[in-house]
Image (cartoon, rainbow over all chains, first blue to last red; front, side):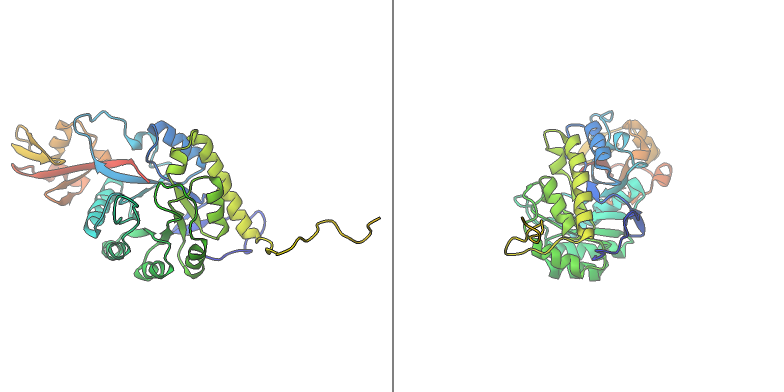
Length: 266
Length: 66
């Protein structure tokens, strides 16, 4: 959504999805951390208000294993259950119905993937699953390709937010198609979040400078040498990118333009 | 009583209801969600839901994910 220049200095800058309002524009995943304690510390350092979570079978051979909810607490963070690992609409719907029962929330992240090599979304199946979930009362944030045509179809079907990838999940390759993301952001009337592909802080800043509402990342923080420091870096990058977007960047010029006046030279 | 729990066959002494199964498995019912024969069982109904021979039970919880 294009709201550049609408915020007076000092006013609170928030964004809303499915009737909930957030201040932090950085959503973090909870996968790939060496332990849940590091994960919780990174979530705090990131200033995150929302974390994504997965639904999996309980390990029955050792029910005393550490549990996510004992470290990353659902009363501290909004849990956004995902459908990672689902390759059909039916799998996704089944998973999120269980998530809704486990947590009691109907705000969810839909991702329906195509194959395990590139993990790119299967958009036809994603759109079908979205319609099933909306009919079942879910508020759905949808992981999708950086395809403005499909993004609009998702929005028209009732998506609560559009979440195009910057690059494949876990690739850390940054924003691959800024033009497509800009087109998606320009046309969307629901929040747009860049989800997947961020590798380092400058990637998050680029995403925010394009005008997206928030950024979702997991591997860039979890696989950093120091995940907690990288979480802090990402927090600053998202804020910097957001403020740069709101401030409105200078035009790009072909030639130099001196900053010191030429008049009055001795 | 033979059940399939999370895809694995298990033989258990007869249990009166799902709540007893959760206890038997050492799980905290507040932290899981359960499907019985592909139907989600609301947490409030665990002690009303029978467990029968041949049932396929899925017990899931939140774990880390992106």
